[in-house]
Image (cartoon, rainbow, N blue to C red; front, side):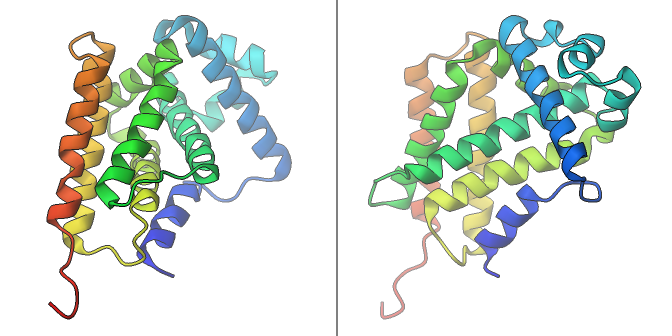
Length: 211
């Protein structure tokens, strides 16, 4: 299995033992309810009791799946990114250079979040507030973002330098979300920052074998 496939497999893998079909359906209802509440009213609108009622699960059951609101919203972000990844795969970026394709991919993902600003704000705030207890969920967000970037790059065997560049790109993208949501950056500035950091991919590209 190549490195891209391995990262994507880790992104898709659950942090706990595999759920039954019924448990997975329940989890999806919970995540859907979380996203719907956040879309309407942001971070403060996501209350565990309301999520339980909207998803038709007992409050105690909800807490077994997600110990806190932060756990729930970070998992919601991973779920949203996974959905975005599926959409991006159906219509992949068309740029010739890897840096161009990654920049296009991340801006498409950014614009998807832009269409749901309350949801985006709630998820990013949760990611910012997350402590060590939320590490598995945060890791899933990171792995899913990395998988999206590697998929856009189209490399079967990324080098350590390229993987390092991917991490920097990921950090910049998350930072851009925060600055935009706080009103400290325009969409135009976000685009410039994303395109600039994606040039790291070209800098880490290996020379042709016959050079």
